[in-house]
Image 1 (cartoon, rainbow, N blue to C red):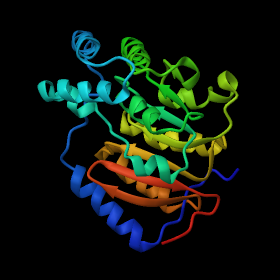
Image 2 (image 1 turned 90 degrees about the horizontal axis):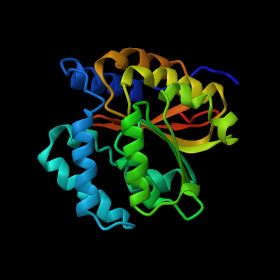
Image 3 (image 1 turned 90 degrees about the vertical axis):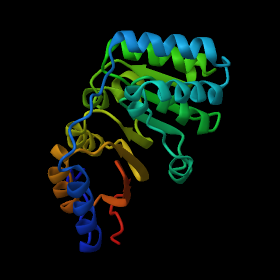
Image 4 (image 1 turned 30 degrees about the vertical axis):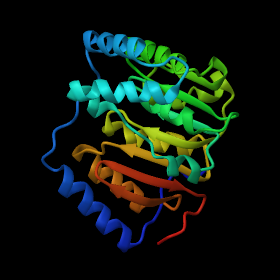
Length: 241
């Protein structure tokens, strides 16, 4: 498979470059983990205050706690319903599930035969995320959680789970790994035409190289970019705008 990425027209590339560099040139990198004390406090709050077996209640409890803790608030990545529907998602890959919020959100939007593969590098965070997903009422046959670096996990999906394609990918880890993650997904053939990739918290360190890669590719189309979220669509020959 050709490992290059989509050629975009000037009408897309220039606004995207402006968006990346204007918004992020002076913004520091976010902290992508929380200490174990905060993790346990969040865990206790969700266990005590949510209605177990009800995903909406668990998600609401996460948001309630986030009001009290700005670090948790920054970690709550909420994939929109349209993205899940647009990609006709059945198989979703969450790279950087952190406290489990995004995985629970996606699982609540998927049809009964949908499945989430969630990846979290930090041991205690992965353990907590798995517990929160189960507390929400989802079963082990509806999701798999890998405690591994997100990019490394991409290379093990086929051998561990016989996974050959994903419909939707959420990237929510250190943004300087997004480029390598996107390359790996493409080179391993894990994406189908129409697959969506949502990239959260694009930072200044990744911006220039990432945009340069998109400019050289024929496989991707930028759907939109707003605030810190970039939405990209995969296609064997992505349509130029």
